[in-house]
Length: 506
Image (tube, rainbow, N blue to C red; front, side, top):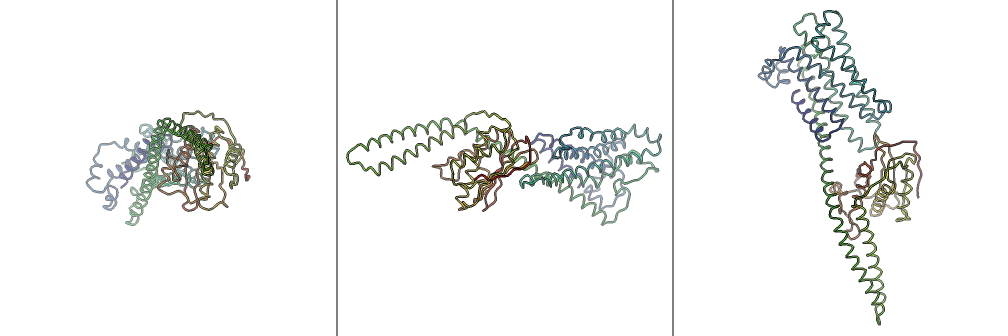
């Protein structure tokens, strides 16, 4: 059972490492590898020691034949003991490093020396447990074995508890639901692996080195090597190991699937972006030719007005309508061209108050009676091109207000919020429409995708927003509230923070 769980954890962490080549994925792989080495070493030790019940043998090895196969593998006690030492003392190090990399506490985040100091105890312990040095020091000092055991046992447990504290504190500090759900998978995985490790972390490598010694202090260690447990005790040990291992494996698999799904969606979306870019010039050129033809038609209509007894009312109505359509199509073709052409952005420190002011001005220019509420920390700064980023916010605000109107909720305001969440400054645009159909959520940022009237909406708005946010090294997320509206989140790399100031822009 333990070997299967370890193999599953290794496979999952390797997939995460392949799909997301970052520091956290590398630390997760190190955690799973060290835990696998630790549990595998303990399994081999149990197989060589023998003397276990049939029930425990089935739980650990599935069959008596497999246990015998492990028992007769050639590995010295020094090799086996140091294998256990490596897994035992590297797991808490990787776990603590992982917790510190996720922690947003300023004392941890702004002090990289702490990460280097965390290496000291594992390195010292692994040096002292080196078989040749250990066998040299034990005869020289009678209390060395017990001191080294207690020293290593207390710091590994301390590292695990400190890491759990940092992870739980970080989870409780998250205020945005979609961030909390994403972090929950990481937290459950870390907690499950930690508890699985704590079940067996008392196994001292020195017990392996002095396997045949009668005077060794049998302190802690794997319980099944010291005590004859009852059937209930074995079942409890088995259940605890299985629950922790399965929870860790399931959370890791879900995290892996989400990582792969996000990457796959990004690749698909990028391909569609490329198609839109390459075909846009031809598309816009064709549209503009049609517009020029319509302008000629408009002139002919005006010329008809000079004829005898024309139907002036009808012709004027057609003329006004044609003119309006022409101008609208020209405006939209220029918008499409601006969206897909190669453009550069100039990122400079810009306050959220400035961005909110520009976005609100554009919004009220289009919808003078629109109900808009801005609730942001005006002093916070982000690196942004204020023209492009305010345009992206404006697009989301207009989409939100139009959703409110379609849902007959003009009395509800479209709201612009700001959040400081982990490594991001987040701008949220929240509407009170009917929400987004589940089948459409994955497609709303695709170019030329629209659920509205295609004569007036070309499906380029959210594609345009996504392009702008990506040029700001950020990302766009959506959270749907079926029947109640939707929230769009613009995640921008964090730059500065100050106290929250709220004001209403009407």
